[in-house]
Image (cartoon, rainbow, N blue to C red; front, side):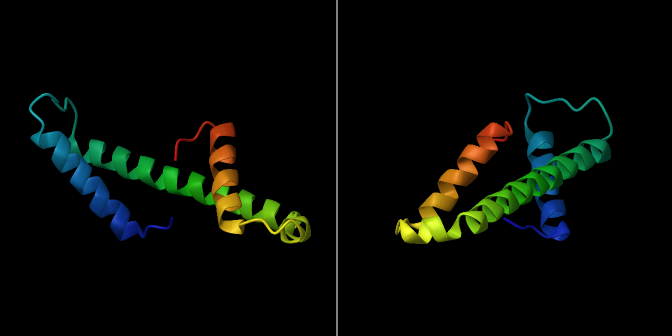
Length: 93
């Protein structure tokens, strides 16, 4: 899933807004720092998910003839592979 830098910034602003409105959370640092951390985490997660997607596509290309010969639903296989690779890397989708 690709998000533009503008969308990442928008989401980071929304998360920061939710944090600031929550009476149980007290920010003890600069709000700009919290915003930057949230945006960086979102960016890193997207980057990790993109890397997982690339790994899945490489594996599918590598075994394309076998997959086609077995008449397997490629979409379902792609999703299963993505979940397994993410799990192997300790990444929660």
